[in-house]
Amino acid sequence: MKEVVESTEVFAEPPALPGRWTVCAMLFVATSINYMDRQVLGILKPVLAQSSIHLAPLFPGWPTVEQSISMSEQQFGYIVSAFSFAYMFGVIFAGRLVDRLGCRRGYPIVTGLWSLAAMGHALVTSVFGFGVARVFLGLGESGNFPAAIKATAEWFPPKERSLATGIFNSGANVGAILAPAVVPWVTLHFGWRYAFLTTGLFSASWILWWSLKYRTPRESMEWTRGAVIVPPPGPELAWWKLLKYRQTWGFALAKFMTDAVWWFYLYWLPSYFNSRFKLDLSHIGLPLIIVYNLSVIGSVGGGWLPRGYERLGLSLKKSRLAAMLTCALLVLPIGFAGGLTSEWSAVALLSLAASAHQGWSANLFTTVPDMFPHAYVGTVVSFGQVAGALGGAIFAAVAGNILQLTHSYVPLFLYSASAYLVALVLLRTLAPGLKRAMAQG
Image 1 (cartoon, rainbow, N blue to C red):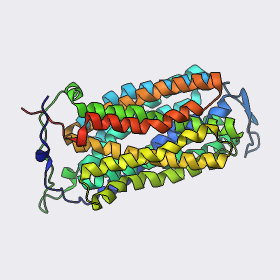
Image 2: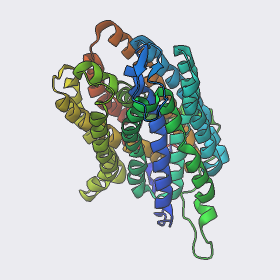
Image 3: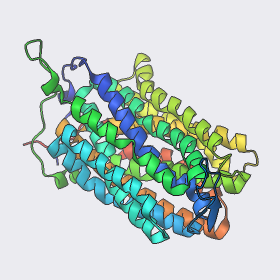
Image 4: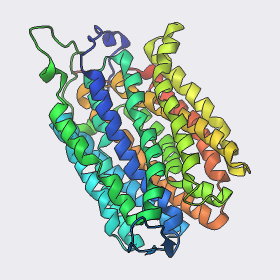
């Protein structure tokens, strides 16, 4: 397949559209809910590993003991893998759904599915039941990022996209902050089933807000006052033809290498603090809240970082790559986390690594609209999400078995430290300079 030469990428900068930051706020809230629902299982893992838990009820007559399911490390790894595989398959269709229906109709559909699945966890009574619930959660949650990246590409000019992506992507951190703040309290007073119900209820109000408020820029503009300037659309392509482009594989392999690390943090950090530093459910919340609070800085700061490099004289795409290199280097110290004896040293290294990951992620996502026409952004992002979910599924199964056999986190943190530099090398090899990929007639 031929590629368009770089000179064809020079378009008039689109105007700043009024209302775009409101759209960004809605994407931020959706991503917060997405990650809050996703992290509940990881926080409850120490509880679910027991046969029963003792409650401190707030109301007379409320049970003081609740049955759990005695989940092992290996079983937990397989459950996380089930979510990851479902996410992987779901995102194949989610990207196409969003590209076909548009963000306004497609986004609420996937949000509603993951909300029902999240609350469905409260009904299960076995490890297998958790696996089934996680499959449906993965299918629904797979649509969040294809929809959010597509909405960002529609509403924001290229120079603002990484910042906007960094802001809404910081919702992942906020969701990860809210979960350890809410879930332990609800669990200790009402039981673990109510923890799943509580976090699953937030989506309904968001769906209403999005359906009433969101419009495409074309629908929201008053055409008597001006027009939206966009790059000329690329030719119509079947989705599978996008796999012929090296840029698609560069993005997908970078997601494969690094998404697994973030999922490892989400699912295993509560267990890491519990097993390494003997923190129980009532004390595990503060370290997690600190880690994810500080990672918000990385998400927003990483989204802004390319603009800082631009001011030093680099082009937009070189600035994007420079920002990603900076984030990849900041992750390296996490390789020492497996041997730490101080929980606050672990919090410091994890905060740095989580911040760097979020900065990396914000810039990696914005490489897609840099390289592809708007009509294919959702589909290409979906390919990347598929690869990321596959990486997460493999990592989860391997991590569960490593921990079951060795009880050591050292090899897992060593992988986490090196994954980003390897991913950046692969991206730059397959998509040098983030060159634009478009078929020619």
